[in-house]
Image (tube, rainbow over all chains, first blue to last red; front, side, top):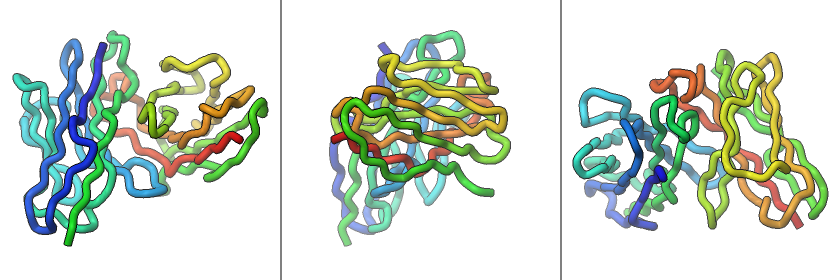
Length: 117
Length: 118
């Protein structure tokens, strides 16, 4: 079965410090990976995606993520956290047409990021 | 460009009733997907519509159904509501959808409809 794991329910970081939100995946075939952020009472906002090419992907609001095929990971990073980054972060994966999970995003359980001033 | 809109934003129903939720995609987007978000199960895929056809379906009972109109607007219907159907229902639109060869497509989500079943 294809799945996404976000091993930390919550990540706490001080403002100005670097942050990492972890994500690992399990799929058959090539993964296509996404990060979304959700603020309270809001829908999901797209941050970035990895389809192919450079393993380091840059996205919105200064976020980036590194695709590591050998470790099946796609961790989200930011060099300097802001209080306004505090939110719920979701990692998601989809796969090529022809697989049972094509056409839909499979989400991790989410990680709450708390940035303290 | 206007984003994905969902109506209503909040809904309270009782067990046994049925409910219809609406989603208007971003202009030009032809794929609409629906997801259910609950604290226990997280985000789960319900179904995807493209050009008025259901192209993919998640593991939900037949009480959950949907449709898409020629203008790409989509509705989701839940019949015989159960307490466990209480959730945030999210709609996402994209140009051609992940199954349409549009792997570079991004799904843009609406704000969701909060359904409470009493």
